[in-house]
Length: 304
Image 1 (cartoon, rainbow, N blue to C red):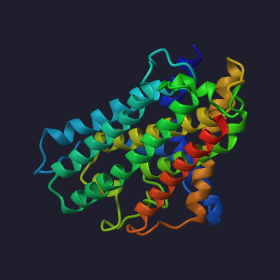
Image 2 (cartoon, rainbow, N blue to C red):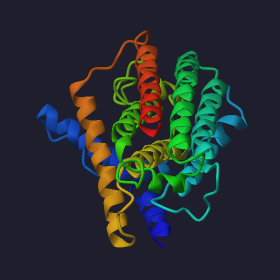
Image 3 (cartoon, one colour):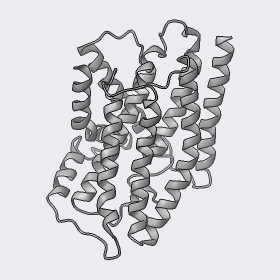
Image 4 (cartoon, helix red, strand yellow):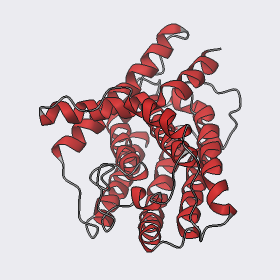
């Protein structure tokens, strides 16, 4: 029951997280900024518009937004709070590669339009994603080591900071959380990897890939992006929050508050940092990989 409530709230409240980030950025800039529910208004407005497709596109452009949304919804179902009923040993690998499926679908849709700008954005997305995969595998390896070889998202409850037997692993867990935060920023095209508010085609990544989308297709893409940010924030929350949290209403509240805190952190990061040059992005990602390796090394020292 807790899982169903968390999953339902995730589907409904995902655009709210984007509003929280925008409000934090507006607060740092000393302005009011967009409304907290602005993304809801944008999605509903786009759903009322007609679908406009590029004259050079095929059915791939029509199907890919739906594939992306479907993949993100399944990933959210795996990560909706604690103890997902559809979870299994190895679902953590499926969780990350469902996002990869959605990303590939978006890249294919961008390439299908035949636009030079969308092709440029797709190329950058593929390049950065290839580096992110290395970090993801390192994080999965860490979680498998600390949970005695398990690859299930449910085991995250047993490996949090207050878990029995891994009290000395606080530092490695925090390092892994930091590495995953960097992955979250890159996967969701946030500063310093990309700027979701930019309007210059030559520097955009995610926004460049959806330049030719309009109407319901663009609404689906925006909602899928918000839901992906929510699901990945949920993964970070479950990784960090103590497993001794009681079941029921308190668990749900802590899970939701944790996700909002992640949104606040992302908003602060985007407010105090500038977007990095493209040549610097691989270095940032490799720094996350190094942090994850250090976490594995420290865990090995603490365990043995």
